[in-house]
Image (cartoon, rainbow, N blue to C red; front, side, top):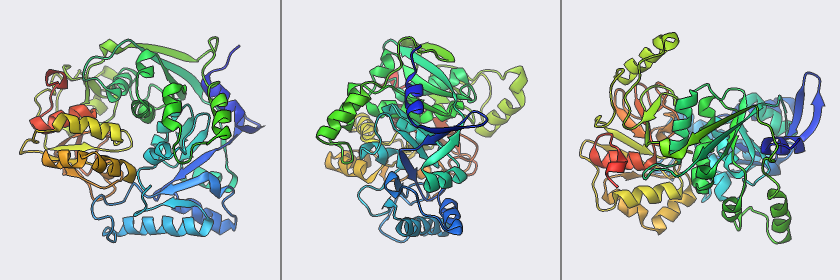
Length: 462
């Protein structure tokens, strides 16, 4: 019997098997940031042990960093302490750090791919749930907790049970104005926020294959939002062309050797998945969320459904928080804030798309809108192409790299009670700030909503 892509990579990284069906899995790359690493480093210090493979660990500051005046000392005390602690720990333990002021600093899941750190066939972990982003390259990538961060630092391995395998195929041609973000929001709306629990997902089908690497990263990024352990896409020529010539990609003969291996990374025709699902690309509309988990989403022309009998309490609580009710449409709903950024949609392709739409236009006078590049390299490229001027001329606040208003752990928060159309990945209560009301959407939908001052169906405007 053939193997799935997941099985091929997992099996190649099993160091040992222990009683109870657990595998000791070798980790190729370990990404860390300032929020989930301090206790892990302290654990090593307490036990007087080194980082096992410092060459396999890369650090950056992203979650709590300000996105304005990054050359100045961080004003917020906890954020300042966390960034300083990361800096001190990396220096003590010999870990590469792309901290504030470094030209490679940025969101951990943006800098990994753009530097060529992320490569097909790897196992990659990080103390951040959206590590699944890297699965777009044909990797097994997933988030871990702080205790597991310590395990990897100490041993370069993790003790894990193997998840089940699911394949989700999306076939056909997407409608105009429908992007990768809409694909994944559509899938999550059908499966619910728990529908992928216990599975590692492989995305397939010609609609997935048609996506750029940036689009594939967006899809894999939100796998965790349906409860899955992670998501992945088999590497192909699109993948190889993206990775080639990046700073930390293999060179010369090493490239040829790596490429030969990468070309074997696909699910065999007779591979068996524990669950298979199929979607038609043409059924997918531009998506918006209306509740407080990413599964509470609908096509832009849809109406908020009535709650299921067995989930009415939590459903009604979500709608009450959002100030909405069953039967409402979101087309025409007024908003006050737009956030374009996060590890889901802050790459140069996203910024180019937004700039191309808003060029020559002005955001509505009622709107506060910010664009936050995912890395200093993305920001520098945007400036080189003049995207920053297009965005600021349209009324957007063009920031420096960081997680920003995705998670409300820094200075960039949405005020209580205000509606924000956001390109980020989560819409939980208080995610973007206490009392903030988040509506997830694609960068194109967010840009159009900023211009119009309300939620719109972007298909009618392009």
